[in-house]
Length: 328
Image (cartoon, rainbow, N blue to C red; front, side, top):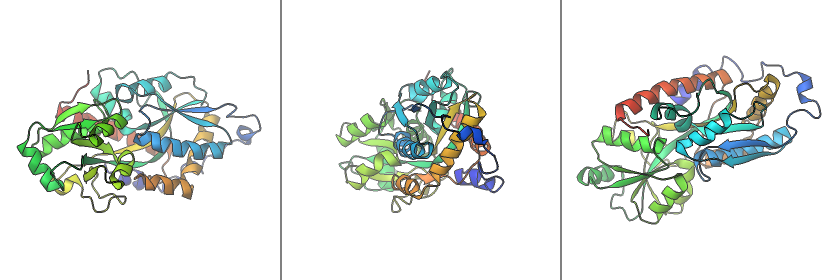
């Protein structure tokens, strides 16, 4: 189901948190947070949710009148950091800012990812959706999507970089191979930053990367954007076509969202959800995120966010099965 459709269709049913009365005692002096809150990002610095997490975390710190710090814990396609939060104390001082490739795709890729994406977490808030971009080094001969597809169909030795096995940008390449009749060879990296660096340096010609992590290099002319992975063109790159314009039916976006471990006390959970709602309502935060290529999510309740996760778990399970991709 479409990101906007899923969230927007039920968006008028509730107003996220306004209908929930937070007991005044929860806001008393000395209440949560009394020490820094750690926001675990299960990918390397410079990636999509790292960029978004730092922006959202800064605004939430202001709302909470406390310190919220980002802790990058990359590895295993996001599983290491996600496991850490799943097993963290249930006190609200360890949170997870993650993306759908880790939370909704990994359970289909790994026989034992080390966490249950639904049972081990409770939603705090949805940030937005982000397309990936099919990128090439400026020396690559293809200048547009049609030329890229024609070149790739003739050359079965072309390699593409991704942030790692099982990441969304890995699967986007597999989807493109399957749907467009290509034979691009996957080269996984440990995070998006080293993958981008090697394509910038010309060691590899092709890369799938999230728009926020790629946009500065595109604007600087250091990478050429061939196409975006979503069903619509991105406002940040209005002249860049979607892959679906040449490969009908192709669609792959990720969402970014904040979770807490299941079992965090209700008053703390409500305070976090309220802080997230207020942060996301901030015009300056929204403007910063949009400049990074993030499509801000319509207001959504935690229940709606949970349903989005469940729908994506089913969707990506089918895609992973059809592609034959596996990490184990």
